[in-house]
Picture (spheres, rainbow, N blue to C red):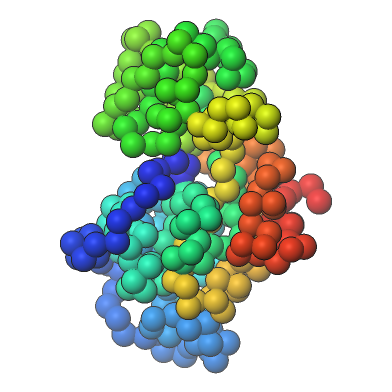
Length: 310
């Protein structure tokens, strides 16, 4: 989410055991009257979509047995179109990936970043949205480029890949925190100049904590030449998210991707992004390297990523 989480996640039995069914999510019994088309999607239980998530509002959380948040709302819309009943399971981020890679769940959602390594162990849908490089800054301050960050105090959460990017900024000082609250607290107190966090987290904090007097800005992504000179700057570029499925779930992945693409053209994706305070121009238009990253890897040579305004 939306969050750029660590890319290396071990697949361990202890992690798999952390998957727990959310309250009210129901058992393993299949629903009645499952259509042949829905059953053909090949979910673990016909007519049921078992989803692993980590609580991470406003992207994913469980309320009264339902997944809510941006990713949750997108998946709910898609599942309804496909005739699937969502049953969430709550875990941590490592457990989300491990549950998919061992096929204990049908899918995981919540700002999972596509990567060439990660796609070797699972399937990614087309991007439901793209996560722009967002910055939390104090009112009245403006930072547009990586050069503007030189010499500043920059905060993020421990383990996020922005740590590597910040460490590469000349004369900048890294402040790493256990969670986003620490970033916001020090930003409001003036101990940090810029906080790198998932954009919807910053937008939500603006509403919930007006006393912080912060605003959301989007960094102008570094050019390809800048990234070539300093590879760590790649994490200052937008990244493509995806819903993540087991390697064998090809029919389900293709069906979900078709519905995601349709949401770009029928206005549903724009509506949901706006619901959570996001800017569709930032979230729903891919960077130039999105297509080239996946063509010939997990997409055909002529694949074009979904986008609004096409």
